Length: 493
Ligand code: SF4
Image (tube, rainbow, N blue to C red; front, side, top):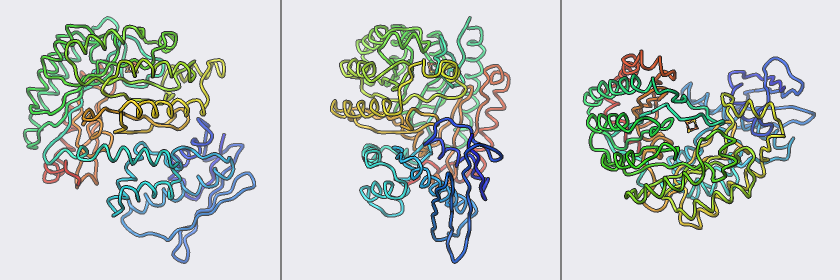
C-alpha cells in the first residue's frame, strides 16, 4: 500500500494514475501505507513549486505561477503536480514509461493543443517529448496519426455521429468490462429492441429541432449480430429513416459465430459499408481460455463470406498480451491477419479491468496464469506496428485505457481511404455523438468543442427498457442547454 501525503488531496486520483505507471495495480491511500510519498506545494515569488520526497530521495519542480479561470488553473496545477511526482518516480525506479507522464485516454489531444498554440506538426511532436517525456517512438506515432487525420477530424457544421449499443453477446469474454450481458434465452431482446426503436423515434424529433444531420452511424455492443437478423434490420431501418444522409455506416459483426449469410446480405442491402469481424487471436487454445465460443477457422470463414458478398471495408480487432499468449502466438495471429488483408486492423493492448472475470482469475492463479511481462507486451505492440506499416496499413486513431498491459495503447490502422470517420470523431471528441441503448453515453460539443456535456444512459438492460423516455429527456436537457451553440458545435476548427 502506498500512502500519499499531499497538500493537494483534490488530485489524489490523478496522482494514483501516475504511481500506477510505475507500480502497476497497487493500492493507494491518503491515510496510511508502508511506502510514503510526501508532497509539499508552495507559491512564492511568482513560482509554483511542487516538492516530492520518498524513500530518501526528493524531486522538486518550479514553474511560473499561472492565472486564468478556475478550471484552467486547476488543469495547470494538476499537470505540474503530476509531472513533479513522475520525475521522482523516474529517479527512484530508473523506468521510462512509453507515454511518459501522460495518463489520459487521448494523448493526441496534447499534440493538437500545441498546434493550436501555433506550432508546426514537427514542433508539436518534439514538444510532447520534451514536456511530458513521451518516448520519441510514441511521439512519432502521434505525428503519423495527426497526418492520417488531416481533413477527417471535423464533421462540418450541423453534423453529428450516432452510436447504437446492442448489449448482448453469446458468451462473456473473460476480459470483458462492457455493459453487455449473455443473451441467454433471448427473452430480453424483444423488449430491448422495442425500447431502442422508441428512443430512435424520440431522438429523431430532437435532431430535427436542433437542425442537425447525421454524418456517421455506428452499431456496436456487445455483439449486434448476436440478435436475430429481423431485429437488427428493424433497428437499422428505423435509424436510417430517422437520421438519413450518413456518409458511413459501421456494424460490429464482432464474434464470427454470430455472422451468417442472411445477416451479411441484410447489412449489405441496408447500405452498411463497414463491418468488423473480430478474431482477437487466431490461437484456439487462447480463444477457449478467454471464453469465446468460436475458433480461428470460424473467423476466417466469416471473413471470406463477407468478402464474397462484396464487403470492401472490413475491420479486424486483435489483442496483444492475452492470457497465456507469448510473442510467438501473437506473431501467428499477425501472420493470419496479414494473409487475409482486412482494410483496417485495430490492435488492442489487453486491459485487465477490475470488473472483469480475468481480474479475478489472475488474482487466484497469480504467475501460474502465464501473463506476459510488460516487456513482452511492448514487443508484441512494436511487432504489430512494424508489420502493419510494412503491409501498407497506417495508424489513424489511438486511445489509452487504465490497467493496460505495459502502459501501452490501442491503435487503429487502416489502408489508404479506409479510416473510420466515427472512430476518429469519437476518440478525438471533435464531433457530437448521439448515443442510444443501454450504457451508451451521449457527448455533446459546445463552444467549438471547448465544453463537452455528457448524458449517460443507464447500463442495466431492464432499467433501460423501463426508463427509456427518461434517457431521451437526459439528452434533451444537455443538447438544448445552449441552443445557439448546439446547432453550430460540430466544427471546432
Ligand atoms: S464480445 Fe466484446 S462485449 Fe461481448 S463479451 Fe466479449 S468483450 Fe464483452
